[in-house]
Amino acid sequence: MFEHVVAVRKETLDKKDHFRLTSEHELARAYLNDQRIKEAIEMFEHVVAVGKETLDEKDHFRLASEHELASAYLDDRRIKEAIEIFEHVVAVEKEILDEKDHFRLTSEHELARAYLNDQRIKEAIELLEHVVTIEAKTLAEDDPSRQLSTSLLQDCFESLEADYDANNV
Image 1 (cartoon, rainbow, N blue to C red):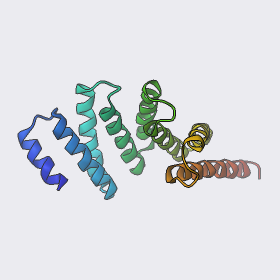
Image 2: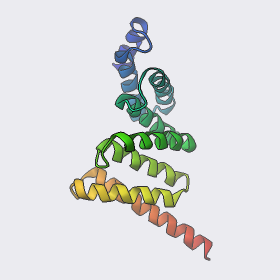
Image 3: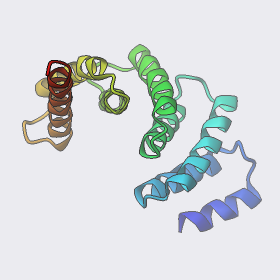
Image 4: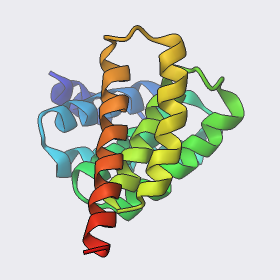
């Protein structure tokens, strides 16, 4: 369905048209959810490139597209590229969003996940401790987002412990 909508909008709308970009963004998300990572990346790269030309750095749609592109890169094991984008998104969101904002917490969580994948464990822990602290104040104990952040923080501590054990044998 999204593929048809995008095909029609590519023929009828300018590449900078908001409706076309929104459709392309949603198609890329569908690709990502379907594990069609390469197709998702190609589409998100286009949406992000156009967004950089046409939207303010603090625009929510632009930040959401950059976040999704970074997630796709992370899924594709392009960790350094994912980190670069997530760091930018988190920095901008720190300027414009409250520390309790769901989008900001999600970006911080994903940046921490990227740090963990890059063996930057202490940075991941520092970021996740902040996320877990805020989520403990704002979300129910059984909330899936909160549980996911707590679990990732535990993974970080286990990874740090394993590194310590490996270096002290």
